[in-house]
Image (cartoon, rainbow over all chains, first blue to last red):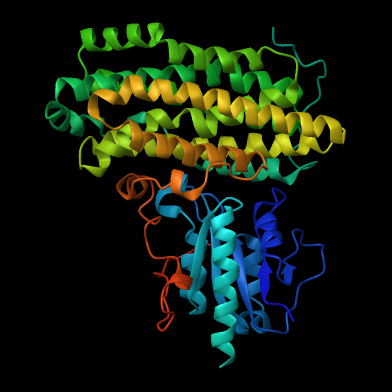
Length: 135
Length: 321
């Protein structure tokens, strides 16, 4: 069973964070030519925020495409966002956008690839989160 | 002596070796700004409320930042160009170099708007004579002029993601007290740029690491951490020189360690300083990012109610469910 779905660009920051969590996870593919990811179990989405610019595009296109699939969208249960406080008001805003659009809780925000503290809080938090979901 | 590129071929942005180059180019050009867009003169009255000691600290901070941006614009980012793995990487460095010059230019706009000529002259003299500031410049310039491309990227990422922050603290401090708020807005634009610069140069460092032997990789990791310690020791002294008169040094040091961790992460390494040494004053963190102190830790609460994010319109045309 998959409990996490995540996107990570070639910088692999989010990928490293998810690896440290050591839970089952599927990665949304980077390139349009890669096979499309369809999920079949409820999941929490981990998403990096693209950079705090004057333009939109805070949510990576690949994640938008993944969530535009109704089957995928119906199974999202929460969102965790990564970012950098240097982006000011746009810090981790991908989490705000997805939580509002999908009406799911915004569970946690962390910077870059996350600290040891972030990893342990998210790992423990996810465990309790899924227990509550199954009640 | 910086070597010249020994290859001349026209850049083709429609043929990418590394998609990160275009992504970062788009982000940097999308973030382009000039100091004229910030109404700095609205801070004149606020500046007049600062004490002489506060004015002196602030002016010295800005001359120190000017020095670092000058180095990064005219030497640092330029020195990375010959080491580029792709032609698009070269182009991104030219953008970074130019924006660093815009940053250096911006401090002069702040000076001419708020500060008298004798005060500015005193601060520039101070920055030329302050041993820790000069040492900081010497350490970084040493690597820029050296012949190791990866060490150059480490030094550059340290500058972008760590060495600026002893200075950036001051405008965030004033902003948290509702002072010099327009100046703080301008500094936030600089801080945003430095995040992309540090991220990109750190990313290219990691790409470079993939091409060297495991032994060299280990050596570079050791080098990175010892450079960080050397720079940190020096930053502590610089911080004392600037902030001891105002009793802010310990608060600034937390901010330094917090950013040192982020510099390491940009280079692909784990954070070094533990949480209780990096718990930045919430007022400073909030001045940097109003979103950072919002409750985005659902896990630590009772979890009985769902936290729904605030609605934000996105411009992605295919975001239509």
